[in-house]
Image (cartoon, rainbow, N blue to C red; front, side):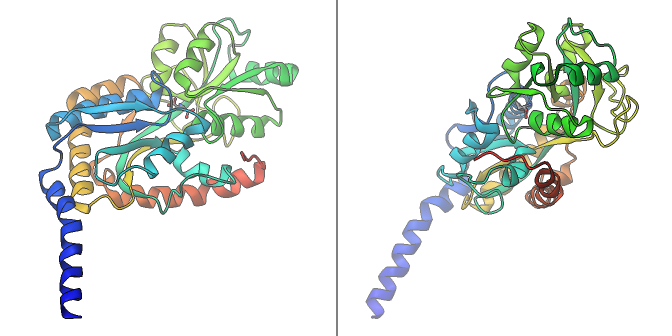
Length: 325
Ligand code: ASP
């Protein structure tokens, strides 16, 4: 018995040892961050900026991999099933919390299948239209949608994406449905909006500020209570006449459940360094994107955020009765 117990203890120690050694030396090989949307969109932009600064801090290459589709749930599912060794991470937005209600079945559980590294940003959304849309104000847009109904093409990044939520709130507020055109991320959607293939979309300022300022798309309202510094001429939803048209997007970094705590802490520290980096701050500022303060770039803050946002959005989504199967 004694021999069996001793060899079991040894076997356990041997199984744990490589992981512990890995944790101390981490990182010894390139890290992949999965973005659950296509390249060129706002989550991708945020990730690439942060990854560059984290890579400098960690002294290792960080590869960004885009796994778009199903409102971000495909990429999140991929990371939930990855090795918990700190070499595969996820950078996702509010969809991590809203998909918990929007999807009847998901390949992951937002509260059980991840280690939380920290919050990354807070980002407003903005309702935008194709450049030749005959509308100058949000009121004009509402009239356009009410007249056109399902002939109006609204682009989004699939059920559970921020662009979907924003459209949902808008359609609820004006009690009219549009036809939604799903993309695997809003990078390509904004290109189609500029080209006039779709009429409207609502996206993070990260992906729309340059196009609004150069006039290649029209902006009608931001979805936060105060005007956004990088878009001073764009009214808030309330100023433009719709109450309750408010949604603020946040991003977080996740690792698969079981990733050693030392690694999660190291990543969180590195995220804090990245968010204090002058280039990151300046670039985010140009795009109306607010970096999370150091105390929020922590596992505790992200875990609390995911839980509170699941609780916040569940009744809103259930009232709208929109689900993906
Ligand atoms: N902005 C997109 C959305 O949530 C996702 C992305 O492409 O980053 O709708």
